[in-house]
Image 1 (cartoon, rainbow, N blue to C red):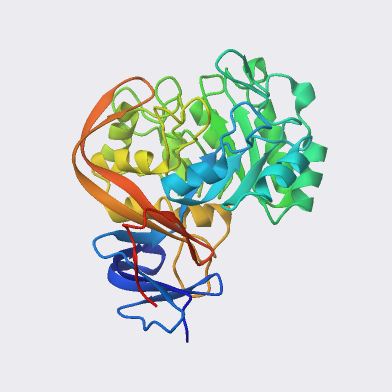
Image 2: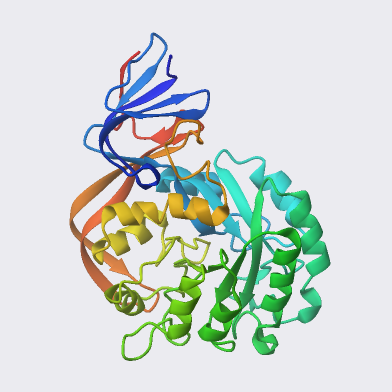
Length: 388
């Protein structure tokens, strides 16, 4: 067996395989070829020394907006993924059935990084979102397009992983939960999970999670009051506990207005960790407070979540939410993606969407990315070539 690439001697953390130790990782033909204590290089093998670094499956950011040029909130996926250690970016509703074809042709198919998408039930997706214009696409029921959404989702199952809807006072106005009801019908019709955004009431947090099915995702799950998942007394709302028990998934979706340290502290104190950590990165939060996925991961690390759990919530858990078991692991035959991280010690300032600051002592930093079995990005001082 001749490997195309070997990552030599890194601390491999692959929660999908319960691997947590110093290992080599090999890649052949664009796929992962597995993990072992020592892998033998062939004459043509590229070997990179990653001793002292953490090697994980390629990070999955379950909530991004990367329809660059097609929506005002879209960022460039490849630029973001290269520098933030993300190999799979999930766009969550930037495009609806009326403009998904353009998103696919001009962004998804041209991107080097893998892009998957939740299709918005709104005909034009999230079209009015900027520093000066804020139009909730779910406010106008005429824009809800369940028939068109079902047809587009069914025709693009290779890249569409679910249906997206945004509800709340800022997103659905006086329509309340009606757009969610329509989106659930579409998800049932095409046999896909749904991701629901929630902002200020109405509808209430309890009403939204009460409508979600096993495998559906509530994003902005640790949002601040109002519509926080915890009570003023710091307990988790019974409806939230009931939803988790029946299989609803809770995603962070940090963004510019949807994550607070106060809520996170309360939830974590009750033993309620998120199922997935995501950035909800877009043009209005990429320069703060969200920044990127590894910054969001760092916030949880600094709040006491063990590193292995933070990585689980950014790899295999996200892959399972997507129903894409070939992602989120370094298991032989899986997608040939890996992320090389360093864990820096020091004094680091983190901020949430309310302006509260957290003084952290650690930061997770992306140092390199393997995509499709090839070294895609990283400082060559990290993972330098040490042999052939």
